[in-house]
Length: 144
View 1: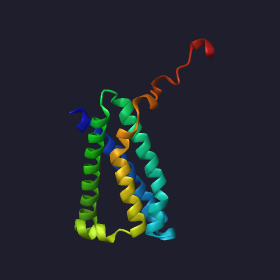
View 2: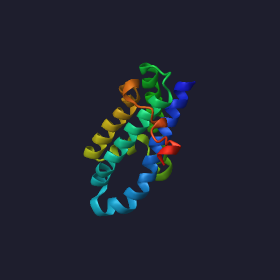
View 3: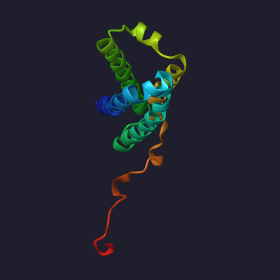
View 4: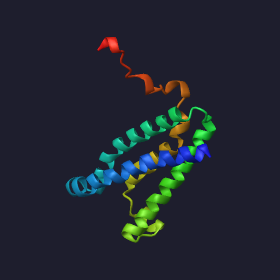
């Protein structure tokens, strides 16, 4: 159950960020740069969010093994792809095949690579390489 919860939270963080960024990308970047370039400009931000969220998953769930974290990433991946296809269907009335066919070959390929990174990222981190930041900003009274 912890694996499913970790995957769900990981998905919500990344999908929520992508959904929020769409409110910047679509009205401001697409008219100025086009769909392909706008998506490519958004990608470094999304990759940074994936890195942050996957490291957060490892830090918040130290009890999960590497294989359990991979399962959490796959769960999040399945949720993300399902959500993307649902949004495409309900917002644009496009079938999954139409949605995939409508993707730009360049930005779509980069997006596919980022999806694969998203799926495996939680399993890539070594627990020892992800510091626990909960005690980084503790001040002593006499230091102030």
